[in-house]
Length: 153
Image (cartoon, rainbow, N blue to C red):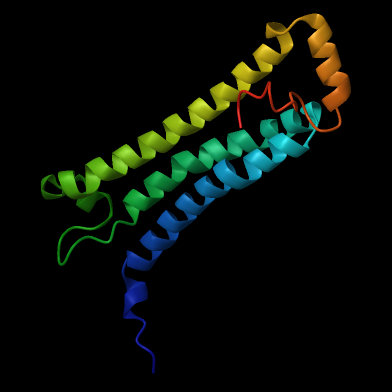
């Protein structure tokens, strides 16, 4: 009979939580966000972001907590959040986990800010004739589709 004792520990659940967190972050940042930005029209992209970003921010907040809660501990040391908060684990567990989750949140906020800045520049930063020409020319490909004027992506 197969030994299932590993499933009685937090280790596999910790790896699954961390892998899901990292994979979702990479997918949203490097694949789906860029693809949607480059292929959807402005109104469709805006609608998509209004639906996706609240769920994405919630997930980016919940997964670091789940990773901390499923910390398996080292040897016979404390696991779960007790192990994360143990004084012996501050440099090896708590600080890297806090730094990684903070950097991911800051990266997501900066990405959202750059999209808003790009929308503002497109709406107000260019002369009216250029905005109208860009909108009519690139309307089916998305806003600001001219590669020379692209600020973000």
